[in-house]
Length: 385
Ligand code: XIL
Image (cartoon, rainbow, N blue to C red; front, side):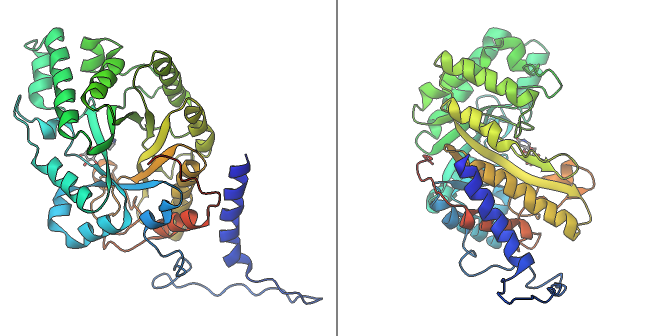
């Protein structure tokens, strides 16, 4: 409660400075003039003061917080401005696609390590930690696997061997290099009564496949932090409660689960998960790490200043929730520039979901993140990132 108040006051003060301006001590104050209209381009209201205009990774350091981004490996190879910005702003990286099963093992038994290795090398050059994404997911599986299961040429016993082997091979290769893994991604349905999603893993390995996967990953790298990760669990709702119950059970059984990843794919047309701090707090009390792993804030184009302002608030709400949670170790955005964001491709008519525009210039959302990191008091360097 105390921490919540400190940060809220800080955030309010940051907003109030501009609106109210310096107070005067005259007996009969003249009515305050309205502020002059701000230009829409150039140095507007969100232009930084020198002390806040520091890279996110620098501002986050005193909180012991990792600030991450998903990386598009093609852009990393071809776009110098992208590469430089990624190195400068972030202390953590996640592969947007190249550590998914279809990318790592497109042909059975033949691993394609190249792109993932490039990302690992980039991170190491730049002192960045790596969040591995993702060992098991029902999407972006190789065709040989899904087709083999569908036509019965891969039976349940064989699928179990294949999954164990995949997890072991991948985790061992990056042992000591990947700080944390999304071991299972998006395991629950998102209806009113969430249950384990009906994937090939659930079908053929049984409902305990999650515990098995965690154990296999732990055996392959005992130092990696093992996460379950999902969307629409940022606030308190039936799906996040299903995770809470599962996490409690796995911890009780001493299954090696170390963290929960909250994807944080927000959309301005839906309610903001304003109770994210309370949600993260209950996982924190189980002794788990927490992290926002894929934050972006989409809306219907075209952009206007109202939507931009809403976006600032949405990013800041999730970042504040993380800062308020003692073991929230990382705040990662799902791409940092609109130039390569997945949103326009996946959500028709929507976009502009990241903190930098298509020219890699900072947007108000970026200034907001800087300000929250700069203003938040009571820093907690013991998060363990
Ligand atoms: C997305 C990528 O951004 C796209 O490039 C790809 O085509 C599909 O997957 N939740 C996740 C991510 O866990 O892996 C997804 O990434 C976005 C939603």
